[in-house]
Length: 180
Image: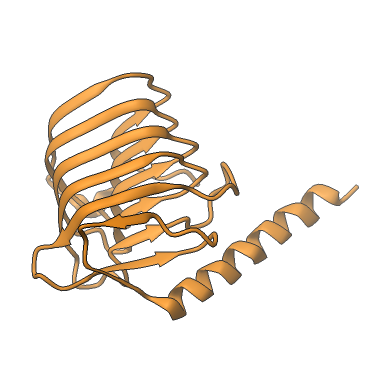
């Protein structure tokens, strides 16, 4: 089933959005509160995003050259940020994360995506947690984002598990496609 998103930007080229105020009255009614999907050469600058059942910010479906900066991200029970689906050239800059106490990571890089099994690429530049702790990252397609001016901690056990999960899902899809 597709996610229920509060605010979505999809199939856009060259847009610039500023002063985002993505604050649903009931965040638990949404999977992702800010979804960016197949956007090319776009920027999203400034504001506040309050996460839903899954994530505050979800980038998916081959986004390319997308910059997201100067955001305060609050929560997301899975993670504050997800980037997956073969996104390339994603820049996450000057962001402050206040994680949900139930989240198991702050950034989920290359979770499995039905839209693409290509690895994502990007930069985390001065992405920090509000409480000063290292930003927790889990990655799943053998490529971490470039990390600049950010204190991070890779959660290796979860990352190994995500790699295995992705490989299993990829294999299941391939076998399903091979059936007569």
